[in-house]
Length: 130
Image 1 (cartoon, rainbow, N blue to C red):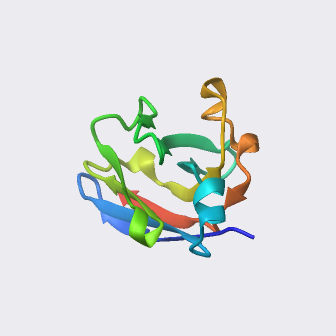
Image 2: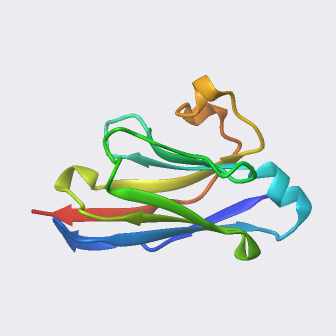
């Protein structure tokens, strides 16, 4: 069973930066296959979970939500089975619980559909103060 563990959340002032990490385990071919698409989603109380960025690990492409383009950057360390989300120029509206998600394959028109992801981390809180 694939497990995703996030880390790196915290509190920062507007304009600051944070880097989130998501590590998939166990380290195996099966895990790599099952997490070929890894994404970051975020959620605030009373709102639906929204996609932030999705990374196609074997292909290398990354897709970003319009709200974070130019500010957030995804990178990966395949040796560590870890996906990173570098968040710069943070805004108060970025405050949310951030979740890592993964699936082996997802249709291009479903990239931002949380229900289509098979695996989820426990979440890490990001708070941006003005």
